Length: 159
View (cartoon, rainbow, N blue to C red):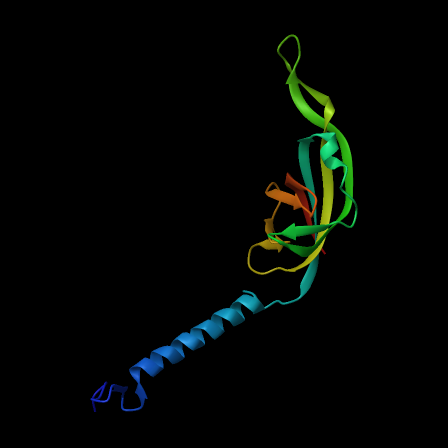
């Protein structure tokens, strides 16, 4: 018995082209199931809170921020919302008259401290919240319909 006969069938059972198409379909279905289910099989959404600090912003840029604002990823809204925020004088390091480095607060610029919260499925070694990977000391964009600030994640809490 030949492996591929004169009709192009593998072991006389199935056409080699049909077998390749069937394998491609099975791979696509398996990949989609893996992506939807997650690497560890966990599909339970968990609440994640992240504290983000955006520094040295002009005060007029901060007038539109409100608790409950929904974050945007790309061109669509996400389930991530602002739970609380604080606007405070911008902290900085500067030099004094003797050339020493000293701590100071800028009389004009402001720092924005924001707590965002959303539900997400945690799979593998990363946490994605609102289309962005989050972990402490990583950049995070506080992006709503009306504003977009680049900040740094100070703290991540998974409930």
